Image (cartoon, rainbow, N blue to C red; front, side, top):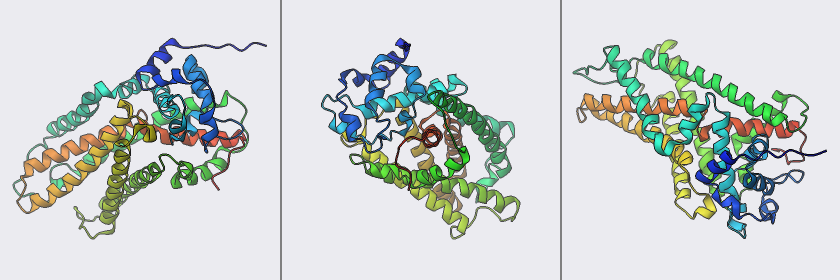
Length: 376
């Protein structure tokens, strides 16, 4: 029997443009696979994936769970004798796969090219909020200001974000099914998906695999803080719905209220996590990885959400004391709502999608009965 190899020149060209040009330096010494503590003995990586990247075998990479099992610890990059930077190459591969798996794909390409399209990605959500408020006649600023609900009613916020959340869930389902089918083409799976999902969710919640990383060990702390910061922010949003429509609590909540404390702690976790990751990126790139536009857009977007949220909270407090104009507070709040909307919409198309795809890859790996150490 013969095996057909289907190199893709377009994939090779895109890989060169997205930070994977060093793949050509690899001479298959296997140092990378031998030093990677995350690579299972039965299916070591990233040596094989580097070869496929050199050849442009996009179909092989698309169905390989190892691409997502890599956490870019950069132990391989730090020890590569040819400076082929396997961690950066697999990062570039993941970015291209996010584009290919995206639904619709043109939105994946739009985010994938964020280095040039970021004004559009950020500007349109902000313009959407300005147009919506203008159409609803809500751009007028009251003389006496004490809460943003006077400017933007809570019902309008949820009327926008709940359908957006539904859209994100729907397109993530389509993209996830594309990856799941691609992974399944590589071999049979057995067992229950949901039976494997629970231990995988626990593993991801604690970032246990990150604990095996040596060269960029501090990335675990940054990712863990971001993960739980987003979880806390999501829980706070749900609690606010309960507070407004079930408990009937007046807004804004006092700073000492438990819901407010949870929200502020979540913001602090996001700020700490983003700070750790930014500090890592400013260090030696061989140890922490080289940033691409795809990565930078996500990092800046998360940073803007955090900073704008803090600024908006301070502006409300200062406007209540007459130290900030209500018009300025309104402008800042609308900008914050736009940035948050951009973050929501980017979930299936940005580096945020790693959460979905990595989860599916680890579940697949367990169901395929690979000899990989479990989360325990």
